[in-house]
Length: 178
Ligand SMILES: [Fe+2]
Ligand SMILES: [Fe+2]
Image 1 (cartoon, rainbow, N blue to C red):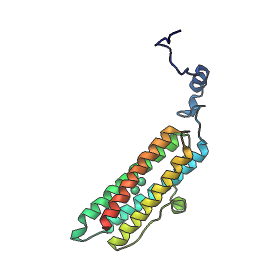
Image 2 (image 1 turned 60 degrees about the horizontal axis):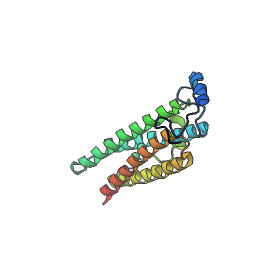
Image 3 (image 1 turned 45 degrees about the horizontal axis):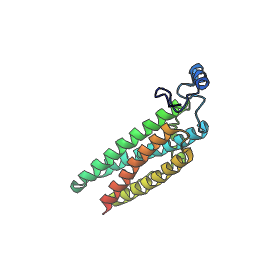
Image 4 (image 1 turned 135 degrees about the vertical axis):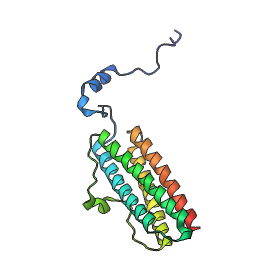
């Protein structure tokens, strides 16, 4: 019997759709969510702490860097600070979508962060610290993406986009050292 073009090859599980429709207090999280939600929220909160520490480090570097020849470097530090802020916001938003609480507690920020703060006063030391922090962030995001696999595609895609941005940041810092 020939295939009816209007019959889809994959049948939607209608019972699952009805369950999804009924639990409205769960917001974006439906019963089909495959990942370990609590573990994903923990990972995202550690990434949030990392982004906030990176934001503070770049902000300080932006304000501290001086000298006529360092204008373009200052601009780069500021742009990175702004992008770390965007990453932090994306992570916090996703934590809320997963019915978690984004942790902005400054008292525990540095111990939860993968990357370190830096209070260098020499430009070269600042750039090196940023390059190291970016490489740590890239590796942490890679491991998170691997852990989540295909169980939470929305989170995976977001982390992949952030990781691509950190790769760009690392490349920018290495160019400044050349
Ligand atoms: Fe970032
Ligand atoms: Fe970065």
